[in-house]
Length: 88
Image (cartoon, rainbow, N blue to C red; front, side):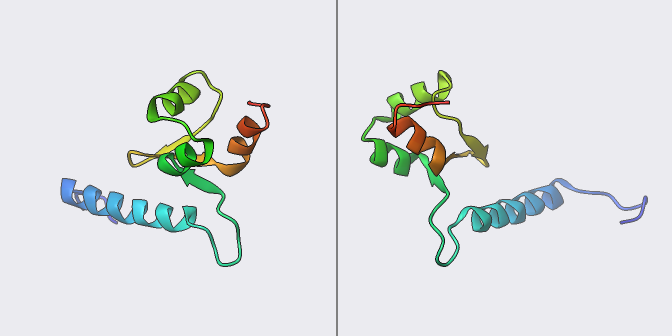
């Protein structure tokens, strides 16, 4: 890009879409690998908790998360720590 080129809102939206698609691919489990990141619904199912309880775990710092494009992802190892009672 040269200094004379302008970046439009449409350019930024297209970039965001491509970036989020690539992040989704990275977060998906690879062949033969276990899933390392889980979405909120999977965490709720695994821990057998409500959306409000999951929110409380996030708020009080018991369960860390990463937010990408409006979706929250949780490390499987952090979930195991909560299950074992050794949060943080």
